[in-house]
Image (spheres, rainbow, N blue to C red):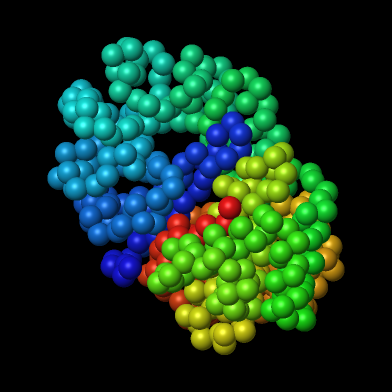
Length: 390
């Protein structure tokens, strides 16, 4: 999927009251680090396969009112998008067009909403986006409110207890989401990871997998998922191991760690798993782009996925190093952003925070451009859409 033009894209998860991904907010900016014009955005809508890239969830996208009359809306999937509008920018004519688009199946969210507006105007909006301070004072539509600028999972849980359902914020990248011990099942997964990584024997790996039915089912789902484009379905664990090889087996078992073997951890499968998988794949693609060898490209993927394990297992980076037998290069990349892998991790983390235009020096040092970044994002998003683990 080729990317034309110089624009930047990032997405951040919107969580529901169960801490699962409900949707994504899509952020698009031009090379001046400003929101895209409606004309620029229309070109992207017309050329990118959003269904392929984000097939599992809807996309909340901020737009200007003039996009409402753009003919590109005739050619996109109306069920895929929720368009976000600022209250201050909408006039009576816009409400007429919103009504027409609602009848066609489009959905809308509004920011800076004044509940003093007439019910006739408010009825057009499926969601209201508020800062947390406003939501506490005005909550007659709490079932439709998306609370932004949360700082922690603890805050999210406090709002859930008050009846709110949807949440958005950077805390998902920063907060330790839940304090959990390493369960026996997860210990088995860690043992399998180290067996594949250090003393790889297909026969011994097969025996370890067969001891856990869930692992075997996950392996077969993974090898048969769209990410590998195999011509025939694989039904044998032994054959799956031979087809995948050491690199893909390492990736599979580390991703499987995120799937939440306990019911209490269920939200990991749609939050941390997706974030970690896409981060790892993007790092792998960029590692190849800057000319790192095959071994380092594989390590780049693992570093990206490992960068969320401390949140998943409530472990320090030092404990992760010991449990997973991480080598010094990967450890320094995770802890101090050292070396090429560390620089890539720092770059990708800042891209997730929509700060790519502040990274000109880092991009220059790595020999990357904004289109390189967007191309890697598109590939990583599309790859994850084809991955099946459970």
